[in-house]
Image (cartoon, rainbow, N blue to C red; front, side):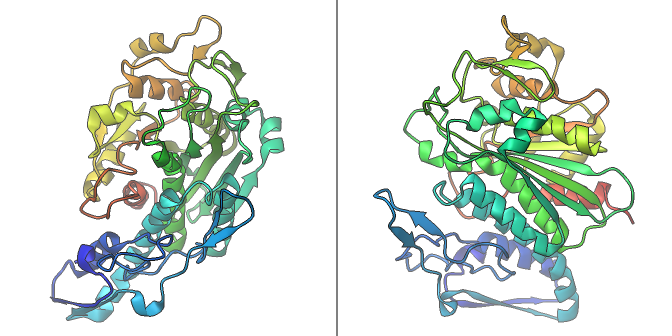
Length: 428
């Protein structure tokens, strides 16, 4: 139904169906559309904002595109209200469905917010624009703060800052806090937010590089989860941190052969500037533990192409130092119908990232590429800290539509992590 909404008024007869609320949520998720930059959308395409659940707050209704020639601006028109699809659910007990739909609407908003962020072009979603969208969520009750480059330098986040030093967009770390629980330590979510990844000096091939607008997918998921938790007033303490950078080639860009000092104090030999996400996460993970002392920590990132070779576009790769946490994540993903598969960690993989000149190097080459990336991150997790890394490179922007998403950004992970919080971290 969601895939066929178009601009029509659809009536769904659900009667006394016990899963009417799930039907409504599925219809909304599949009916999502991102056509804000199409001035002449196809006649059979759903109108922008056609989903029957509330649209994301804080999203600019008229996004502005910078023209390559200079100061001209192309403003994408918003779809007129009359062009939007409408859906009516006919049920035996509408009040019951309406109550259930409140929670579903919060989930849908989080997924839509994540999809919107991932679908945005990089000339709109700069690091500053991203941070502004997150600051706007203060209206939902989130505590949001933005750390700028001067503050990051004082903290010693030299690995993160190195990645962004070739870009005109300033690097930032945004901290979002939802304090809905008691006095317990928070669950921490950390996201990689590379708003565009050229590969830097180790530049990527031109074919397909336009899809590197999705390299902030991990940060997008963390942002969407925090939005959902705030909207449904979750009874949990959760902190979300995102490292926002842009990886560009420039006279100031970091180089292969550079040696960086992380916030932790470990030194890193750069052998590939396209292995930048782990440098961003290394500093943000260390900062998260140092400041918040979380009861558990999960990071999400479009980290490696290797995880796509291993798992394709059906499953995210899960790595963890804690079996109980890994099991919780896998159970939550299964419950929400989002594919996830656990991959190994182990000391034997450490030899692949051993450096002759520094404490480690930032890439171990092609062999076990997703595992050595996770092994790199594990070095920035303190002993005894439950931690999981989820590599979402294959599920963030798959090449075709999925059951619950049209072609484009899926928002994979928002439902899984919301379920994880519901089942394992909320006070009763």
